[in-house]
Image (cartoon, rainbow, N blue to C red; front, side, top):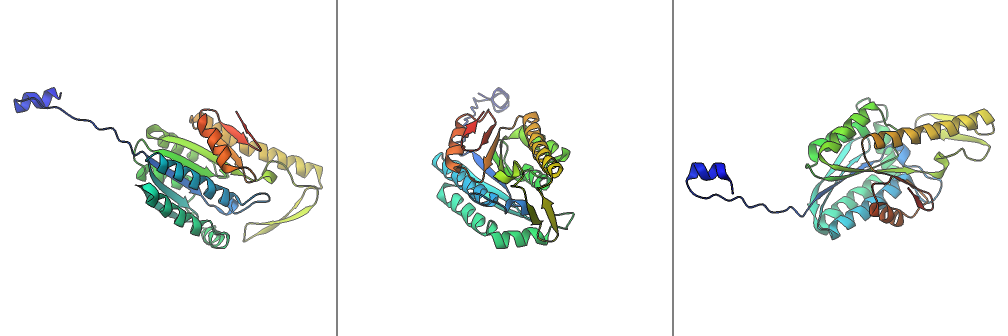
Length: 257
């Protein structure tokens, strides 16, 4: 009973509320140049696409609406929509965006652009397009986490549920076998000499520091974090994680709290 309207109208006025069953699910998918990398299993970009597909079909089965924001030098959006139609629209976008040749070309075209859309700008964009109460999955390797990222996550988290999924290749956890390796970002080249003990120590320290930074940011913003290797079973990892999402997990053959 709305008493204020009743008093003004002079007759009983009752508000009827209907529960919204179709919850919007938004997928933020990072396809920066580093995501097109993999030494075991698949590229990180491919693993991200697998996870996105699994989440989308689970959402369809639950009657939710599926949308996505893909960023790879530019933003590409799929507005949330229900049923298999919404999932298939996402799949068509992912097929084009995760193509290694086209994906890297798009990323490298904007690599030197200071206004190139990255994680921070994608989070800002998501705040504008995601309906409050959405469930938002962020799929990234999180190599561009900054203080601004933490601030944007806080704002996004205020009105939505957020889950972070960090993709990594096993070689990003520890140095490769001793040797001399050529590396490139598509524009510049460099040499990594893992025969040098000091260089190996620096490599390991950098890996640990990066993972600690990502974990600290997500913990600070109360965002569950799933860390998934390119060589792991995406379906099994996601199933276990979503059964207990309050515990951040690292996947490397198994999920550990």
